[in-house]
Length: 206
Image (cartoon, rainbow, N blue to C red; front, side, top):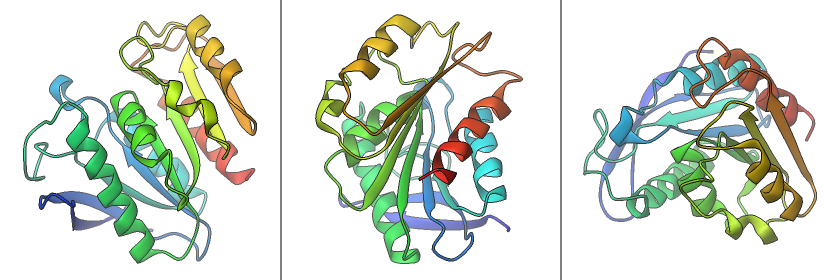
């Protein structure tokens, strides 16, 4: 399966660039949301790339894209609110392209804005938050989220410390899963495959 360049609009009139891979019919499409653009995050991030390779290897379609103001995407950074519109645009694109379950897979900033954008969207069947930045964003909006969800973090993550993450996890309704990976920090250098395998295993189990 080969990634192909795509573009799609947001409701506020911007055109975003992305890369789309079509997987096995009906398997599901994962929307991959990258980390904070003001700290160098884009759709070619090491974790996003590992997720894309793992999920397409498992037969899933994937859509990774650049938030507004990143790479060839129009606009400028919008403090998370505009980026939520970007995620909704990605969901519209995915549902137009694929008649299959849609999954939101966000890493760091991408987990914060991605999860908030789709929490009430019934088209999205499951939510995967990789290294959710719980020291910077309030994730209590997930307390009533009853669809499947996965939290993944390393035990050395300064942006997503283990104890607060476990507290958040305890507050969430089932179905839910959590993975704490030893010796991994927020950036997953050299351990991208571990988090990608967690995501693939979770989606294959749905």
